[in-house]
Image 1: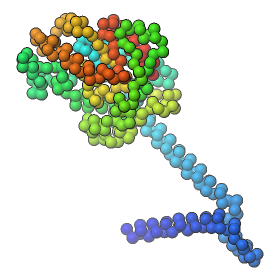
Image 2: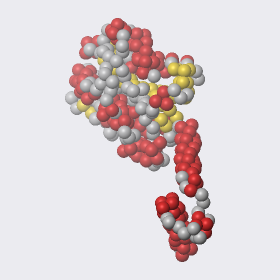
Image 3: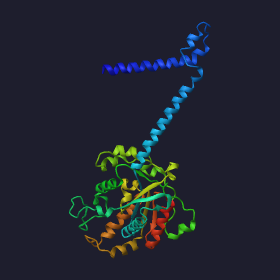
Image 4: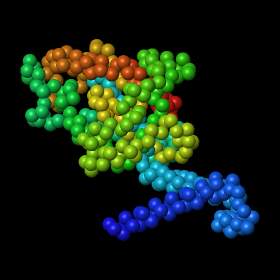
Length: 351
């Protein structure tokens, strides 16, 4: 401790000495009236005046250049170790066609894996799909809510899903360090005729940043909860919102795509705000009921389950995000191929 204190005092003394020497050299010496007999002696203690500003300028250039080179080197290393992800969310009413759309997109993306993806600077690297239906709780789980009038489990609520496990799996896919590819959200289509091709969906206005919690931070409370390694704070500092960086638009990017599909992904804060691109498929009551009756579920629907539970809860959940401007609402009555082409064109325009 004593040696460190002595060293600190020595450095402080040297710093002050250098500062006063330089101030005297630059600000005092030129204005001193010096006797001719002493002039050579005093001036011999200082370098020529032409070096007075050359020395600090040289040190400034070296300092700024060194710091810039250091920052660029470590930023390049950081970006090279990070995964860049485009997260696409697909939600919808039961039997609306969300799984069909998600599988069609996954097949298309996998077919273009490893190649240029819509833009010359984008190269499709990985494609991962996660379905919310895979996270339903077991039938015998005590966490289920039972509808007493029907003596049937309510599968239409968030409590019927193991969302903690789903979010943990999402974080495992994204990795320890990653970058979210922000597409400036959904934009107006300039071609009005093209907007009407779907005969249902209306173009949405660009989403405001306040709609997305990822605009300024990375939901550190969710990261703390779902990050098994306890490195949420470090991950938050490593997240970079790239959409406002002009240089990011031209740099070569290996893009990964994560497809999140499920009937309640836009009703959960983490999955909703993680999605950069959001699509929701809607059906009217009669068409939805007709499709539901053609499917067999395990466990099977009981009489009255659709009317008392499925549809009322769908309407309630839909109202929670219906007014958001960053979600495309698609008409589920349109043929699946048309929906797929429309969604693909939307993604292409965004990128």
